[in-house]
Amino acid sequence: MPSGDYQTTLDYLYAVLPMYQRVGAKAYKKDIDNTVRLCAALGDPHLRFRSIHVAGTNGKGSTSHMLASILQESGYKTGLYTSPHLKDFRERIRINGVPVDEAFVVDFVKSIKPQIAAIQPSFFEITVAMAFSYFASEAVDVAVIEVGLGGRLDSTNIITPELSVITNIAFDHMDLLGSTLPEIAAEKAGIIKRGVPVVISETQEEVSPVFERKASVENSHIVFADKVYNVVREDDNQFLIRREGVEWMRVRPNLQGVYQQKNIGGVLMAIEELIKKGFLIPRECAVDGINHTVENTGLKGRWQVLSNSPAVVCDTAHNEAGVREVMKQLANYHFRQLYMVWGMVGDKDPDAVLALLPQAAYYVFCQARIPRAMDAHELALKAASFGLRGEVIRDVNEARRKAVSLAGQDDFIYIGGSTFVVAELEDL
Image (cartoon, rainbow, N blue to C red):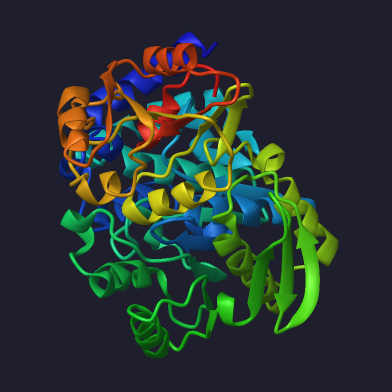
């Protein structure tokens, strides 16, 4: 149970600071000035540790966790900053997989209240400053920093990392980042810094020139990982990796999901670039780091199996590209009947996602307990126009229990549509 002081501190942060995950675009700050001011007041902690910066539409969380796991396996004291959290705020800020101390959160917020009053930062800006302060105070060897949203104007973009990584570009947050893939890519490319190498996980014809131009302007070495590494799925979760056509290694990640195939090459390419910069990362540590990401970093919600007979799986995929990947994964399973416990946020057009969902499934529509959640009845109406049928049970866990009550041992239950639906699962 969280301490009283810690819970009071969180209540204060949630009440006082605008939080994008809860309220949407009005919490998004279109510059990094607040973060610069906050960190200046803290003695610029981001200048006191080495870092790796990870952006992208999908896969940046998994990539960040795999990189952190490999660095841990290699003996580095490794910070990891990610967002959003699923269960506990402290998931956002970890060192070697261990969440930030409650006492640090309490003391940090207490000490920075004058700056909160003067600067009026967002929730995310405060968490970034907190993470950088924690990593500096704990003298990490390196920190993996995941971009929150976009890149160019993201609060994390005050760092000058050892390496930048961009996973892929897909349609998401178009109201903030742009309505075309090149426009979105230009925002992500904002993390490319002068003279800092950049790894692009996937070659995408429409956006690759955006990254190449930005890298050229910044005199940054750029490499497309999928032109070097070929990752082939051999069975349920084993991958054969070839480097320039030569068999390189096999991995069996406990971070489930066929879509990890797209992330692994980018991770290995990033490790190569770090080795060039003097990091000592043995090949066996790369294998072990990939294979043991979940226990090393505490990552949850990526094709996570919650129970069997019937199979119950959740995943945080929530945009068109991400949902397309998990539907491919679902196609690998054999079951009698599919049940979908499904909820979405209300500030995005759901049509592109709903069009991907299987009509043969039975749906239990729900909604997370956040202001951004789409009303479950409204979602059910929209879904019906795509031939998706079922019932409405607003509460996420009640919806899951309903699906379990309907399902037989040979059936499959998938829970998703929103990070916040997954976050509310009781046994995650």
